[in-house]
Amino acid sequence: MMPLSKKLAVLLCVSAHIAFAYDLKCQLTTSRVGFGSCSSPKLPQPIWHSISRSNISHFMWHGDVIYAKGKTISDLEAAWQTQQQRPEFHSFQADMRGRSVCQSQYLAKPMDTGISAIWDDHDFGINDASGAELSPDELHQRQTWFANAMQWPPSALHESRKGLYYDTLFSLPYQQQLHIITLDTRSFKEANALPSIGGYTWFPYLSKFAATIRYVCSAFGVSNNSDGAILGQEQWSWLEKQLEASTADMVVIVSSIQVDHCSSNERYSIDDVCQWLLGADREPFCGELGSLPRRVGTLAQCSIYLSTPYCDSVGGCAHGRVRT
Image (cartoon, rainbow, N blue to C red; front, side, top):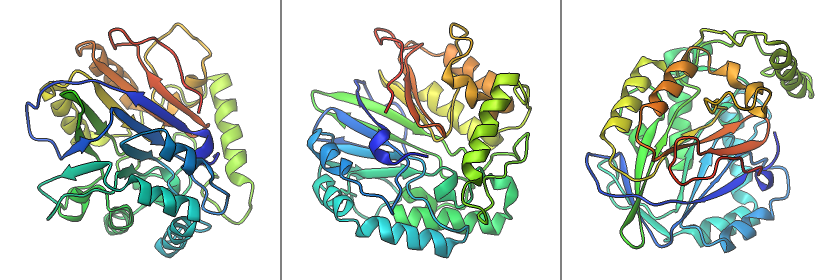
């Protein structure tokens, strides 16, 4: 995957009133929230200076915060330490502090880091991996590591539930509000329809070979009818409740892997390359979005370097993609 410099999308969003209890509530100083993913600790990262100057109030990692050399938690810790030691990122962290203030029942005091996160496979620890490949104890250890390292989401350190999914209500200037629903696409994910070789580390280019296999599978329709699940029943029930109860004018659903945009207008769009990963979740997800008021968008990150704000069901939002 490419470094963060190729994967930033900034959205200007509006919203309305609080109707139910959110996991977190954040007060922002501007009307901009930044999204990005895929940061390699070993590569130069001058992009952080540009992000700081973009006048965002909050930055959200949506997957692959780091790339580790191995699969163990020690490998993840070493990669995260290297990331934090990069002067560009260290400066960005200092610049973001205070731009947003978040409160939660899980926080003893407000958090003002201005940065939140969710994982994908590389910060999960295994390329192309899923929770099905780990024991419950191993999964919980990785979940706790991520929440401790990122200081996010705080609920993960206080609840025994499986998964890192959470939602946040952002209060913007001029009485605007934005509801971001963040999905965990790794903890509940069932095994791939086709076993991936990307998780092996003994050969340096296997991950690229695995990505090539995805393109071939898409071209020939292999695995497009997979019935494997991504979100799991517990997270599905939670997502449905969030969407039904939210009264915000803008709801953004964040996924760390590709989400099909539920449109047949572009038969061979780049979205089709990874849509088989959704398996059994694709149809209900599209149906859920289609039944909602015209104020819901999704921001999806696929492991092929495309960050996509989908606007099919958002009134007044031009349909399209932002290549980042």
